[in-house]
Length: 395
Image 1 (cartoon, one colour):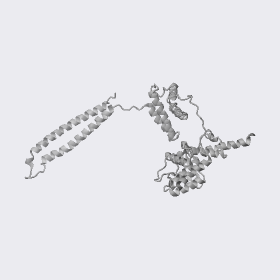
Image 2 (tube, helix red, strand yellow):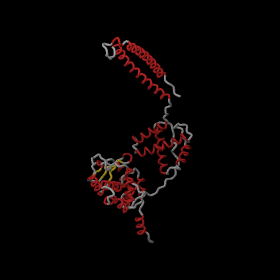
Image 3 (cartoon, helix red, strand yellow):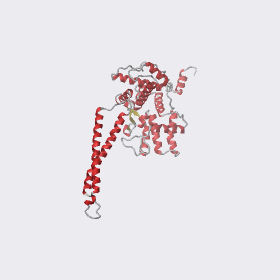
Image 4 (cartoon, helix red, strand yellow):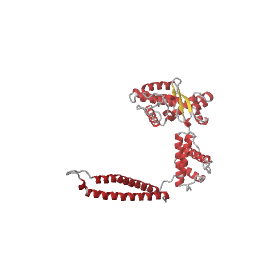
């Protein structure tokens, strides 16, 4: 239960006194007004003159502003009463973890320069954890009072509904959060340090063969010739796939690409990737020719304009690119589970299969760690058979 402050009570009492005074003045004016109405025949100048007598006018002149002031005071009183009621009503208490989550989110965005997607995923992980702690974890509400027993119970329950990699990502965010609290001087341990998690599977990345990629890249042109899509859509989508496969860009990097980021004479794009890190990506001659064709069809080609727009000039979304890719996969009867990111897998795989250096591919992909790039060092079955035939005596 909340109580009114002494200052607020005094201000309400003062307002009540002023309202009583105004009420007395209004009553007096109304009495004079009645008297003026009775005496009005004495002040008429001639018969038929319906003008208001002078005393009546004077009283009316006095009464109008008084009534106005009275109305304003009544409105003010009502607003004050509403404010008092709202003060008396229970205000939602901002929980300590909510405050710290907001600070942590600003920290990782502004200082750590993590992507919006990472910040969103970390926030979701934190909100899920603290909601569970409040409802099922028998938690005291103190950030300094979280045990590994509670953490294990949380992970055991949520691990049933989450993929292993998602669970690892959530724990990474939670571990970073408690590390951040310690950096800020909060006397708390990190209950997520030393927690054993399910082992991650390491499946090989799925990709398309070079012949499959050629079929996919020709799909927009085939559909344009048959009249299924307009030349604008066909060249735009062909360019998107050429940039995804020919430059190895992430879908978010494609969406944010501007004309000012591309150097057509050199066939290079300046890309802003994860962690706001900039890298240079060769796009190739074919992509530059597609860009020239698309640029001739698009009226939105200023230096700061997005390259990939719809016919109204709005930047295409990541979801729109995904749906367009599904349409072309269906048209050429390729697996429907291929995504824009798997075109990036195909880019890396084909580079390494044709003898590119692993560290070079790491730079082109914008990977911070070489271990991330090493997942593409698998060989395709064709090269495996060739090596077997050349090396094994029983082949």
